[in-house]
Image (cartoon, rainbow, N blue to C red; front, side, top):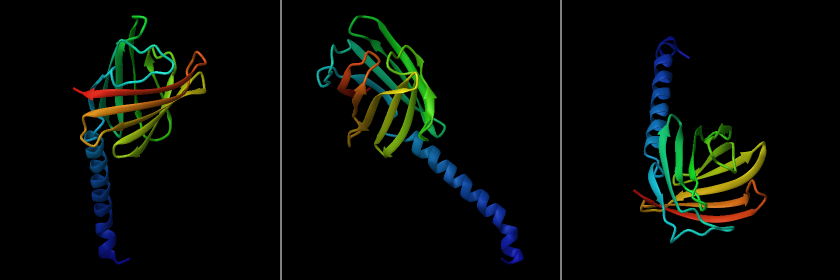
Length: 163
């Protein structure tokens, strides 16, 4: 490598890192899943039931990952409020609040419009969620499978409308 190239290489590398970092930040900020989503009970299916009375999910960019807040009312009338922040790196992220089925979540990006979350409770995998956004960006679907903390087999499809 010539002396001239060695002189420009640090600046070039720094520029590449800035562009790569800002591209990732732009992609996270423009994630089609970001926003506030309200549960559409008429389009959702719960096995086992009963369905919750209401639910809202807020997803926002947080660095290279996301911050998720869940609130609502369970079927028995109790308040639901939990959330997490995490990156799409396959590492465990703590869940705060009253999620009965998980104390950590692992995030993986599948495509531009889809992610997979794996939930664990006390070190044991409980539920896996496939989360995707419709092509028009108006509907968020969460397909959940696994075994909840009560030991029940779960196969839910939750449909949310963008607010």
